[in-house]
Length: 342
Image (cartoon, rainbow, N blue to C red; front, top):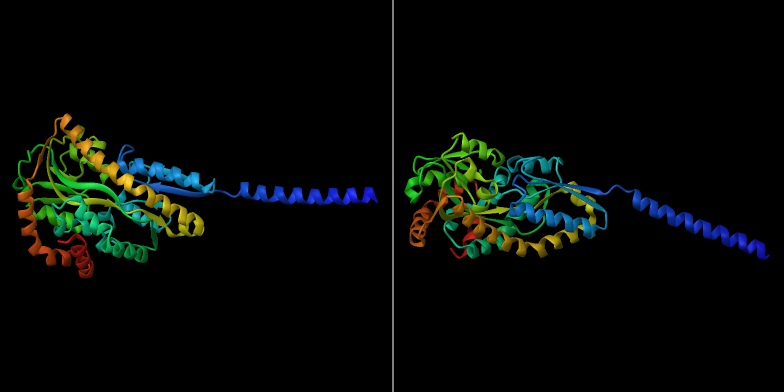
């Protein structure tokens, strides 16, 4: 009797062991969910620094369920092509500039509207964090079938830069061939000041600049510094806070489904919790980059606020025409003006 019980006990214990091992083996055997993230800026850029941290947090929080890989400096896709790649499943995560999304969702470029020209960052944030930003995020998600993780990542204010021609006032922009990041509103602003727009993908800018493809460009202090454009001939900058550069965090729909509700919630929370610090770091990076540009011999001049206000007033009468040309929703414009108090 004792022997029979021992055998039963042994058989039961063995069954439990096999079952337990089966579960463990299945958990270990499952391939982790892969997230490829594509950025076209340099590794030292604030966006890259933030995403290395973000992807590391996702891996840690997932307990091994997620494996990430960051592709930098446009090694996978330039931002001008990454939205299409994201939709097609060639990459799982990206954070393209709003101006690169305008071909799909024209409303994404509202931070470049003349109503926000020369305004302080607090005013811009009222719109991007408010109903205007929510309106555009809903459009992006619906039209592109992607997931928007949350609030937008600050790049910083776009400014003017040139190679040979000194920039002492906004009038000096007239007749210059100026590289635009893309988007109707950037090109409109170049023409407003008498320039000639040229769209060149960011990874190609250093070579194009050194070869004289354009006379200057729209960018930010951090972007031109991290790409060392002073080695490609950049010598002058005129700073007018012409429009806020912003990046939209996007995830491929198929990946989002794979993550499931719990991991989805984790990823969203990680983004929301980290964003204020990243925005602060971006602002500090822009200020530091300006100092470094000056140290590299770049002349940097600020347009006086009184002149910015005067230009802003001249731009506003053209708002309706600009909005129509850019195919921006009148409903969104109302939200922007209300959020920003313009």
